Each structure stands twice: as structure tokens, then as C-alpha cells.
Length: 422
Image 1 (cartoon, rainbow, N blue to C red):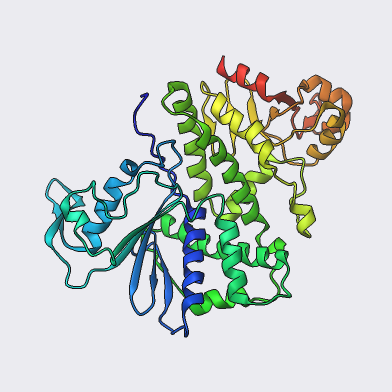
Image 2 (cartoon, helix red, strand yellow; image 1 turned 45 degrees about the vertical axis):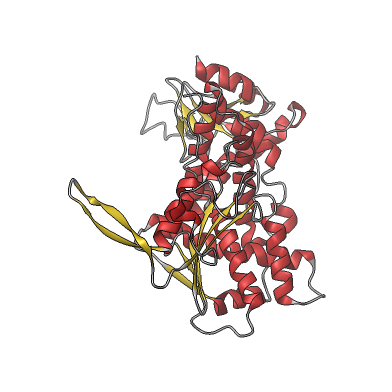
């Protein structure tokens, strides 16, 4: 409903992992000596925690709705963190639902409070360091044990911040910008994979010794190809985030678009690397995904094309359900496959020749940015696209040739939306 809170359910696994890694390396840079037990703990105490001589716990929030710069958005989160780590807590099973617990917080602080921190992507314009607008229980604490870091670790600056932190650790003037970028992506891929595994398996926990992170950073043979799919995943999710951030959810139509994009983003971030690769290969059938170097992977997915085709399809098609495992729509007559094909009509013959080499047996129409070509026209332009098996006429008298593949066509995004919404 208009005016209703639009807090995303999106967990932001990639951003959460990047922030956790950045805080860990920043901590390493401040240490005189890295002890064996010093580590980054993922999804054990809040989103992550850092164990050195003491324990620091962190929760990361990357709300995307337009009220994410207001303290009211985070009030309940801040109170919960302070209750949990500054005061003592008792938990017991809910008598009406044994799967849940009832928490009771003491009025007395812990004997040994735990340092806790909320990190927000957005800068909170009305934030008060002393929490004067909160109940006395929360603003009378020792603020050595709680802080909010807001607007410092952002979706837009986390890469730059990580690069700076990594460069400071390595302290090697001979390292190129590419060397730093490769190491950043390699380390982020490691951390994000651990976080995803935790959400796939609630029993999975992971402690990453600081010594392991140092080994990652010092690894000599890291190349772009090692983390190319992480780069593509981040680019892909950021393109979806860009449209989420611009939608005003107080408009009902925008809220519906927001929810469809949000669901898509949540699905993408839960995919394992191989699953993500298969999905992107499906929506980019005209591209070669066998990366041999940095140049061959750049341009495989472009942010503007994701916005102009993928996001437009997801936001615009509302009367036919999308299959998020393959990014396609099935109506009573045809299957429409979302794609990132954006070439102008002059390039259509080349695209046809490339796609016909792929497994497209279950696709009737590729949703594109510009191309709109019927199945009949495709067959006229490239008759070899129809791949036939000739049956043995003596054993199969009267049978026609067996069509192994399927005729397909192209629909531009506007026509696809109109057809599927009818």
C-alpha cells in the first residue's frame, strides 16, 4: 500500500561480504602482530564479527528505499543490538510455537558488555551520536560499547575503500591498479561464497583466520579470469539496485515494480557461482563465456543493457509469472526468454548465426532491446538453423523428417511487455 514501509528483504550478501573483508583488513593494518586466534567470523555473531584481543560484532544494513537516510528506519535495529550486547538477555521457548524463542532483556548491563556496531550504507541525516531521542535505557549506556557507522561503507565506494586498504597492507609501489583489483575480487569471492553457504545451510559457520586473508592478499598468480564471474555478478546486481533506488514506493505501481525487482535481486544473490554462470549464459546466448583474459570478459554483461532489458522486463511484465531459475516467461502459446541482446537490426544476421549454435530448443522468442523478427523471417534468413535428422525410410515409411531444434524469433522489449500483459 502507498505509504507502507518498503524495507527490502534483500540481504546484500555481496555488500555484506565486502564490508566484512574491508573491516578485517583495516583491523590487520592496525595490528602490530597477528595472533593465530585472530579471525573474521561470518554469520556467527550478527552479520560478522572480528576477534582479536576482544570481540567486535557488526550488523550491516543496506536499505534501498528512499527513507533509508532517516534514523527512524534503524531505531528498532539499534535498540535490538544494544539490548543484546550491552544488557544481559534470557531466552526461553515460546509455549505457543516451540520453533520460536521469547527474549527477555535485563535492566542491568552485562558484567562484560560486547562491543557492537551497526554499519549502514546510507548516511543518516538526523543521526544523533548520543541517541537523545531514544529511551534512557539506550542513551545512558557507555558508548565505548556501541557505535553506528553510517554512510562510510557504501555500495558506491566499497571497491575504492577496499582497494585503498589492500594497497596499504601490501605496501608495494610496483603493484598496478589491475593487481589490486584482481586481489580485491579474489578475496571478496572467497568471503561471499562463505556467506552464501551459511544461508544455504543454517548449521554452517565459518571463521577465517587473519593469516588466511593475508595469504589471499599475497597470492602471486591471481588473474582477472579467476574472479570474472564475481565481477559479472556484482555488475549485474548493482544494475538491479540502481533501479530499486530510484523507485518511489509511495506510488502503488512503482511499489509493485520494486517488489518484483527486489525478489529478483534476492534470488540472484542466493545462487552459487555455477548456478549464476548457467543463468547468465542463458540470457546472453550470443556471447562466448569461455573467458581467456580480462578483455574477453569485459562487455559480456553491460550495466546499461541489464537496466534496459532485464530490469524493464521484470518491472513491466506483471500478468505473466517469471521463472527466476531461467529468467523466462511461459504463456499459453510461447516461451519468452529474457536476453541481453541489444544489437541494432543491422547485426541480426550475425546474432542468428551465433545463437543457432546454442541449445535453444525450449525458447520461442528472445526478448531483446531492438530486434523484432518473426520465426518465419528467421528461417528465411538462416535456413540452416533448422537442424533435421533424416529417418530410415524403410523402417519408418511415411514419417517426416524429425526436427531436432525449434524455430525461434526475437521480440523487442516493448512488444514483449505488451504481449505478455494482454
